[in-house]
Image (cartoon, rainbow, N blue to C red; front, side, top):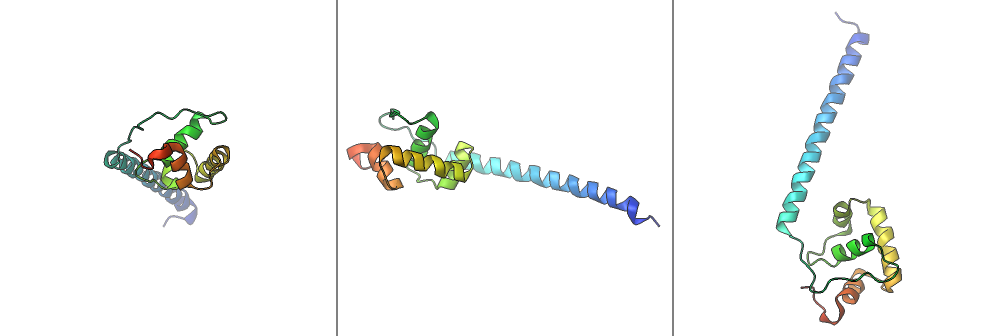
Length: 120
């Protein structure tokens, strides 16, 4: 009968291998979900391109574009799309809100879309 000392490293190696395979499957499934979401809700071009006001970076403009998307994506999905963490998206959102003088998402959409009141 084998001693516990020889069996433990083998078992640990198998556990690590199983975890790595499970992680790969999860990543593959996440990518499939992203592709499915993109196919269900294709990006819509804006009727008028957004010009970056002073103080807004390209990343700020990307956040604005995603926040104003007709699909009304939650910030958690926007974070995935921008490949950022959710706290980083919230920090950028706060900066954008302050620079544009808005207090909420709806005010931001109204400000960006102007008098039209709807996103085309």
